[in-house]
Length: 408
Ligand code: PMT
Image 1 (cartoon, helix red, strand yellow):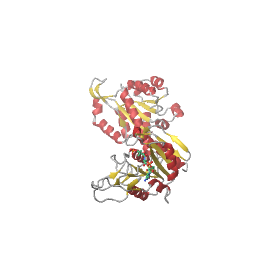
Image 2 (cartoon, helix red, strand yellow; image 1 turned 135 degrees about the horizontal axis):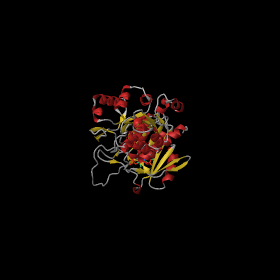
Image 3 (cartoon, helix red, strand yellow; image 1 turned 120 degrees about the vertical axis):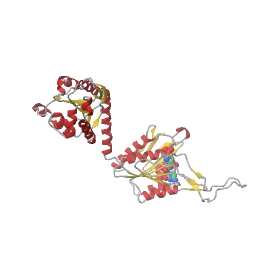
Image 4 (cartoon, protein in one colour; image 1 turned 90 degrees about the vertical axis):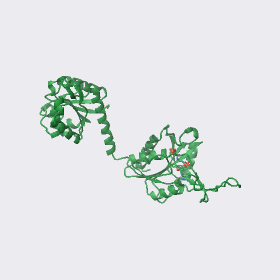
């Protein structure tokens, strides 16, 4: 909440006294508070107490020459991050629901382009009256937020819904409104990879030995899938070519499921052109030379010879492809001298960047949720600390977006 700005409209009701504590609580949390006091509100709290607690002048009059000269009412309605009405009386709800603008509070509610949080407080019969309920329903349709009212004993001696929410509950609702705004802003902002196409491989490959057996490895797909999801969140058009994994397809990504290295290469090539290629899959280097159609049998001649042959290298193929993406990124899964081996792979496979990671059994990287990576490029080595694979993915996407922007 620190650094946020609230415009607090104080309506006329006995619950107005709680608003003084609300101002104090908000300021404790670093929120700057401007207040508007309605004529009715001024019957319950004084401008002096509001000004003293908020540290800002109190606005009361739509036609005040001094106020308008200092800060016009339109600017006042828009200079906040959130407008809070507490207590929101039946009268204020009715005015807001019907778009009336005959005093400062109602004019601000009509002029604002910010979210509004209503904190109703009134007599139980007034709250339950069909007219008030109609107004509340209309305001909710208009996107106005509400907290309360609570049930309980009221100052007028009646019981039921109508009590203004407790101050700390209002603080929680204000915090939730800020979070909602932040999420909406994030979704609206064009992503750092908007308009870019990214192809990512993930998971292991299965190389058949016979119809029931295959050569595979321990890759879970967690790292590659996390990168695909982060790239999609950044606005990219993402093609994920994934080997057999037990985790779900990431959200917002086109997935092509393959088994062997040759199928993976085919799907990647079919997906070109792209701006970025990221080879996070643990592709088998070898496959069985001759495909065996029938299940191999145990025989007197001992274990069969598999006759391994080399698989195509997808990363090296894409690096030298006619439709080479601007950025070609590989991984290096090593168990010793991690960075040195990655530097050799960078040269051999002619890619722009290699993400080196230690996949020895004790690192827990293959199949685990965390990774320690080293970014190896022509310009040097950048060592990242151990972090969640999702955090590696997010940071990598930001790094690649920056490289693309700089012209890679
Ligand atoms: O899937 P997780 O459990 O989350 O684990 C993640 C990971 C450890 C698998 C991942 O971070 C990783 O390191 N992926 C690359 C694994 C690998 O095959 O590394 P490599 O050093 O053998 O290959 C180097 C690069 O060449 C890789 O980008 C690989 O995709 C690519 N390659 C390898 C062989 C081949 N035939 N074709 C390729 O494209």
